[in-house]
Length: 141
Image (cartoon, rainbow, N blue to C red):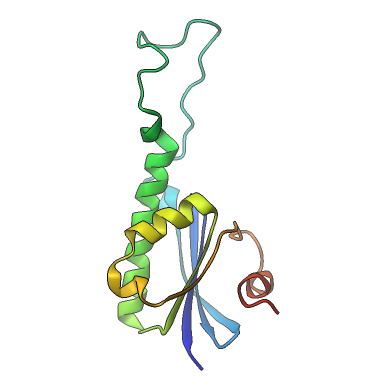
């Protein structure tokens, strides 16, 4: 039976499970964005026609929106944790489960040695479901 590391993440929480065969055996660890200093505070809203501050509304580059920066930063921390768990216990397969944008960030930050063991990617947000539902979504039971 192959040892699998299943990473279930969204923009605020990442949970790491160890699986053998088609069964999740244990939760290895969990990280939360707020615990590592990544805040998910939405920017203040404009009030009426005029908005807070003196800059025009198109001043900020839409690609550097605060939540995107936070997602990128959190994805890097998640990949660091994946790498750490892989170095502790060599896994045969890596399965990543996350909403599509987070999944893309995780994929782009993975080092080559970990990209080679990715066996499945599930573009769904399953952080707040139980292990049995994750097994169904990942292994199709």
